[in-house]
Length: 491
Image (cartoon, helix red, strand yellow):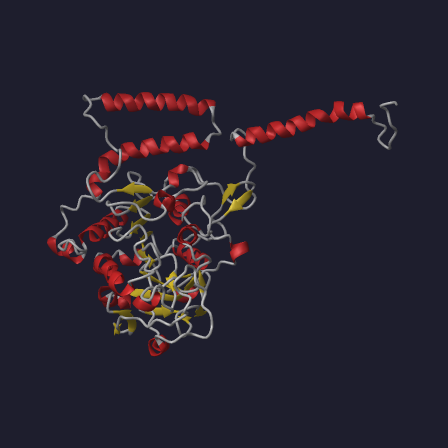
């Protein structure tokens, strides 16, 4: 049998393999080079490339806020026990509800409506309702924008926390703080753009994944500051060095790094690492001073509850957050206390006893932060956010608790160009589902970026062949919620 065959191209099988085999090898080589990051990236068709640094950058339109302080409460704070009173739920508490609510874990099978054990009062000229557990937040009601119609996509803690922080329910994506750092840099080149203040007693659920840079350059990852001992971990040598030794070490390291940069010019990881070293050297001169609270007055320390052992730890971190944004840091996260656990607001049982423990530690410092920012003229340019990852169900679980609820939760904002003394949206008669002027998590993220002058459609980063965004608007249909803003570029 001959190996030749006739065709319109008049090419034999042997000739075909000789001429095209190298092409398959080239494809394989291209894939291997791409995996090692040695291929030049194709230019993005929709995004303007950012330099990998933290220099201040301008947004797409005039900013309303220069910085963000996010007070995050792991576990899912109960909206109908804190911010969203439901007369019908109070009236029918103890009844078995005919329709079935979505329950995540066992213990809610009876489908029995559970009235809130806490009383509500109206505060301020706005007449905003707050539970007896959060009277201090109630005292600043006229500075708050209360969004009662939030909803998310998942009932599990990890997925819910990924969603509220990265725009998707799965891990590995950049957090909001990382996107803000990438998009705007920082006004203070001696400090990180993104700082995380966790409880020094331990990590919350999810640990460091909560402030990840994902596939953005590592320079934009959150930097952990401590409110106990040295504020910045591993910033200084473990042992004292002779005069000039540290400078000599840094100079030698800079020369070695520059040689490697020339050999591997396309390796962004190296460039990010060099930026980290340079930032660390500058932080040695300024970080301790910025978070040193010794110069704060007794009145200010009391405002944050630092004179009370119950509120002192959380209050100290809230005060540190004010000092950081005052010094030009772009994004600060203050994480919830871990005294009652890593998911401290997760009250599947004993809600009446356990929820007051959390509010006692956090209510006064959060309100103190808002008052302090306002008195210093910083609230207008600082967006303060109070939130958890989702809410709770209107039915009882394990007799005296509530299960997770992705369909409704309440989020508070203050400053940064949002409407003050304003309630946005409504839930249904039991607080189970957002019903009026619903706000998705991607909507919320788009709105936060908007207040910083960033268009969520245009803040992109090339990854795996596409221009990624925080909100993925083509899929999530994310929109800026203009109804909560004093003014908007979209209006």
